[in-house]
Length: 462
Image 1: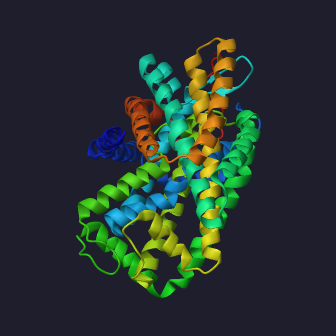
Image 2: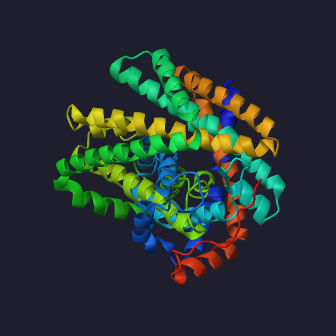
Image 3: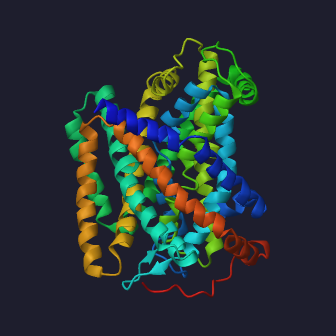
């Protein structure tokens, strides 16, 4: 078992090494330049995200689709993941994480556009889309579409389910002494109550939960930054200097090189915002939107909120806390996070607990939808086969919530990382090879100021 675990860890490290980072970041930069910096339209995109497009085709509102995508994206990686980057790459990793988020908005825009352009409608009126349909209908690469759907279904049980449930149960057990078995049963029941209502039920819960959990966590971070105000300027300068110069050990931080700061900052940013992984477009395809570019803009705000705002705040909290309290242990991400929030007596640990629980629970809900759509795609055109497989999937998914709550899952983390990377490859192929289509749609609706026009393309029925 130890040998197998080591092998899986080595495979995960190899897949998420420099080739994958270069592929993802390279796509971010390429699409940013080809689309004339769509990041500059973030203000317009945020306004669109809260504007209802009731007369347009789709299953949920644009905000509902965004909230569901954010629910799956904003998870424990935004808290512990950033801390791990700081622990391994030093304070400079925060800046590289932020830069990755800024450029990643272009890729999230691109995959959101393809999701709506190539979506299809089922006989009962539901919208289906995502990289598998872009690969099949746009590139005529059915085999790549099938591979993407398989890896998505596998990732849903890993990073989207068991590891999130495990994070919740361990936190509640260690902090409040609650039984992991009891927590597992409660979590499984809550997930069951939500997912039986399908995408509308998931979107409804996420639309209420995401703004609350994000606002609560951001407010907590701002309070801690207020306490660390005397060292805030020094912390920002330290982050900027360490991103481009080697840093010797000292001041609570380990010694790091520019390469280490760059690698861990970029890797955490990419993993946190999921730009290019192909997960968020699955729910973007269900949005009520009059043309692909409107939803593409809304989708891009997911990366903005996730990385440019939440991850940046987390990183600044962690670095400023270490600068203010050099005795904080920086060798482990989880320990660093706990120590930073413990500096805010009574309230800090509560903010951290609520943040991790709500972030992880919402991630489970979002990924339950991603996995279900992947299973539905693999089931083919038979309605009977789809119903049977989705029923089996839901039962297994709910059981996995309980199993994840009571087992140690270090190996599952690495398996989930592998599945996520394998999801990204076919999705990035679709983005790069269909970049001409993305540019034409962007020119038609965005550059020529025709965002309010309805698409004339008919959505095909599956």
